[in-house]
Structure formats: structure tokens, C-alpha cells
Length: 151
Image 1: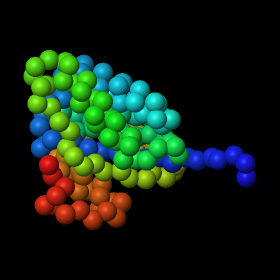
Image 2: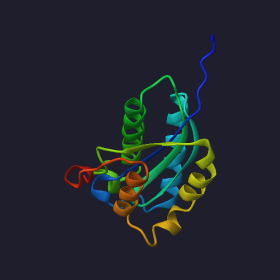
Image 3: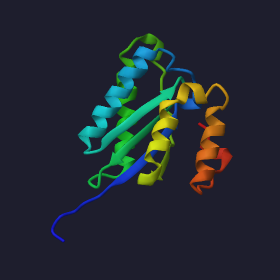
């Protein structure tokens, strides 16, 4: 076959360092999501939905075949962290957690994940980020060591 084709759907999730509530301002959050979308596009990824709450973000995208997950996530975190620090002195100590979750998504689950990410505000009225992350890892068969997953 002379053409390379792919359809790799990925769900990324990661929090602010120590789950600090840095992202309270809805306007800044929306600008942050737009910047994340632009960074994804720069890496040939196609954002499907980016959303979150005050202490973490979910990114659902059609992932590239040209770059590694580590490279793209690194730039998403670095670029947005630098940008947030330009938004005022209240963000001068902002950092993302060092780790992240990256979960494959089947095409048949695309609508379900879209709704899940779209409804983050409502979802987190009853579930913490930590419980959500534990549940995602369990659903995807990813073992976590609680000593190292929360920074």
C-alpha cells in the first residue's frame, strides 16, 4: 500500500500540580482550550473536544501518526503553562502535574466520550479528579501506583 492511513482516537487527562484550583476563570479556561487546540493542530492532531474544570483538563483528539504522545503532551503542557503565566501574577507559580493519562478510544465509543467530556462541570459536582482518574485507569486496564500518580 503506498498510502499511510490512520484513525487513532486518544483521550488525554491531566491535572494542575497537586490539583490546585488554578483554572477558576472560565474565560481563561476557554482561551487555554483554544491554545491547546492550536498546539494539537501544529502537530497534525485534530482536536475533537477539550474541556475540564478548575484543576484538570480532558483532551479528546484524532492523534497524529507523525509524533509521539510524549512530544505532543510535552508541548501542550509547556506552551500552555508559559501562556498562563502571562495572564497575570496570580499564575506565576502555575504548573501542570508531571504525568498524564493517555487512553485509546474506539470509534464506537466516540459519542459517549464526547458527552462525558462535555459534561465535566456537572460530573465533578459528585466526583473528585482523583476518583475520576482511578476509574479511567480501571476501565482501560491501567495499573497505577498511588505513591507516584499524584503530584
